[in-house]
Image (cartoon, rainbow, N blue to C red; front, side, top):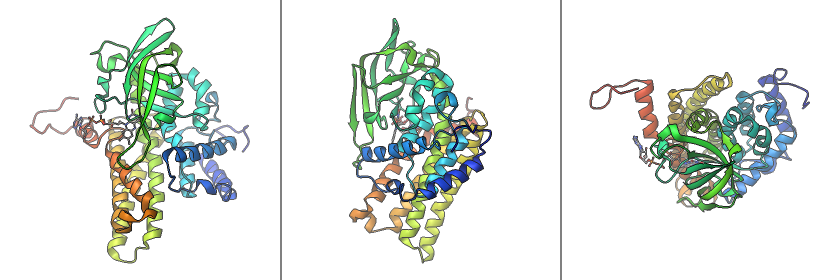
Length: 390
Ligand SMILES: Cc1cc2nc3c(=O)[nH]c(=O)nc-3n(C[C@H](O)[C@H](O)[C@H](O)COP(=O)(O)OP(=O)(O)OC[C@H]3O[C@@H](n4cnc5c(N)ncnc54)[C@H](O)[C@@H]3O)c2cc1C
């Protein structure tokens, strides 16, 4: 692929066709990346980083990111096509890309200098970044976060704790939200700060799920001195950064997960060979939920690519994502019974079933999404009959 082309020269259709032939030509070289169940989360991350490097070095992964950040131009549509084609060829999607899709565009928009210096290493899998937003007392109510950052000369001095940080214990950098305003300033006193994990005072401890998956971490900051040029956006303007980034979490993240789910449905259909009507119907119903997610998510990704702001209606994407994840893995549990429960070979299915329970929690819980849709999209009256605000 010639680096002389620009995004205007390379339509997403040409990109798709070129990428597909490249993936097919390298079928055997790419065999280690066929979606398999890795023994540990760290192993899955390592495999994904290697694949990201191969795609970056061959330029395919540079499309979709701006030239100023080491890319070749284009935008979310090129990236959506990349994931679609990887999934279509039965390849895994790099774990680091789930986070890059959430954090990348916000870094470009609010901290172009940081993006120029660091983003290519993140997107190409050389570095791992993680999203440090949630705290023990601030999940759904993120505006109540308490991790404090006080300006001192050219640094911010950061103290506090983050929790549920995916890939946190593997991360080189944490994209955090910190309080720079008064304790009760809520969303008006929050800033976004990129913190390197090797700075003195940062302690990161892995957390393991009930399923045994070791994806999470809790991060502690004890008077950590972070250079002020690591601010993403203006001081006290972090809520705007988080809201911008949330659109990509709703759009691109869901698109990636739907690609993964389509692969899981294909694998399930091949394993079950549903010949009876009840099994075929169950598979069909699960597939329907994934198609609904794909249709909705494609529309949201197109809006992001057109530079539109995606508003509270994106909560519908999150509800559809959780429904598709949980229906698909519940169907696997039903159709693969009893092997699903006990067979060591079904460990991948079991582990995925567990993970999909979290789909109605991570990135905004189902209850909160439904309230947003009721209040701000459907404008339904409150349950006690009074008009809702907003
Ligand atoms: C797999 C996974 C990965 C994650 N990765 C990250 C990450 O990388 N970075 C990060 O910062 N965070 C991450 N999180 C944290 C996630 O964003 C929070 O779990 C989520 O925002 C919910 O917050 P909470 O867990 O504190 O639950 P709470 O906010 O305490 O909610 C508990 C329950 O109360 C309900 N509830 C709360 N408020 C309301 C309300 N106003 N109306 C109705 N019901 C309500 C919720 O729906 C939920 O059922 C991850 C979580 C999971 C499960």
